[in-house]
Amino acid sequence: MLVPLTLALAMSGSLRAPPALPRADPDVGPRESRPTRRLIVRTSAVDFEVLRAELRTRWPDAEVLPYGVAAFEQVGGSEFAYLEIIGERFGDAPVSITLVLSDGRAYLRRVVLSDASRARVLAVALSNLLGAVDDEDVPPDQVNVAVPTPTDVPEPLVGPPQPQPQPEVPTIGQPGPSPVPAPRPPAGSDDDGLARARSEPPLASGPRWRIGVRGDLSLLLGLAPAGRRGRPTFGGGLALDARAPRGLGFGAGVRVVGDSALAYRMIRTRLAPWIGYIGRVGSLEFVVGAGPTVEPWRLRRDGRGRTLSSREGDSWTILYGAGLRAGLGWWTALRTAAPSSLRLGVAAELAASTQGSGKSVRVDAGQFGPELFTLGGVELALAAEAAWWFELRPHRAARAPRRSPRQ
Image 1: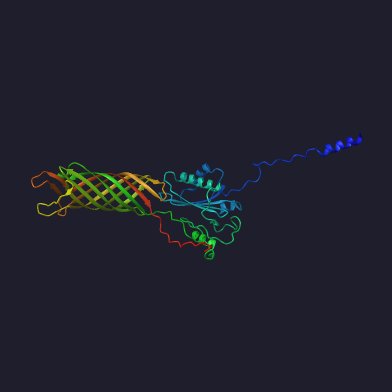
Image 2: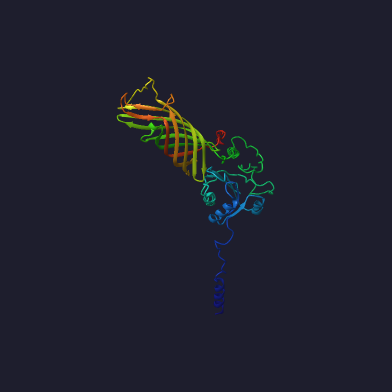
């Protein structure tokens, strides 16, 4: 009896469950460091404090630091992201965004801001970009990019050492340290195309030239002489305008006006170059200008042109003159592939014109017939117009064709 009891006790001791080990909590322990949670921001397009306040409401977990020696000393050797925002503080010129992670990945974006809510729109665009980078939903535009740092920050600054020194990301609009040129890689190597792309400066975000197409529907009223005061006539116009970076505006347009009396129809086609100024206050864009006018006109009856002659036996079918023009409209930027904007508004023009002899024109139906039309004199045109503006990109030197490394 003693032996079986001893064997039973020994077996019970060997079958006892082992002591329980502590279970791992997936929410406890070291987390993966994310460079997008610590931002060093360098901006010329908006005020830093206003942008930081807007970013905190949309990217609350991030630590936003102003660019400087203290920011780089604070991040130490941990991962971070360098955010550069270059552009004007006012106006509709696109703003350039460069996001460089401490591991060398770089993301380049452009966004158009409005004067009313620049910081808010910029914060929304930045939070979308940071979220996509954080989730690795977008590939980097460049790799192995060095973060530009103040000259008195001790090295090393970012991540693991690179196999060879890389040039700094160019900075536009603010002074910075002069980059040290890196040795050029051999022609045809994998880094050759990257070095050329990084050596080219990004597009300037300052004032640019604009070209616009303008169309209008107008009401024409005769003011003087007394015989010119009659029923109004209607027409339409199309113009090509341009605006220099400082506001100088110029262009040329064509306007067609039609009128009819009895069985006759008169068609006036006016050509009008102009020069003036185009400015904007908030969302209102205004235009003032002046220029000469040349207006051929033609009389038709039953679909056929009529030959006209004056009492002196000469034919006068061209009016010469000049005009003053002013316009005002609501301006808004458009979300298109190329930077563009739209203006919708009204315009008024005061013009005077005569025939070559210096007199206005009166058209009668024969020597004893009724008066049909009176042309020339002082006229007032009221128009509803729309202008579509396109920004011109600055000239960039042609890039040499890229060769495959295996060619």
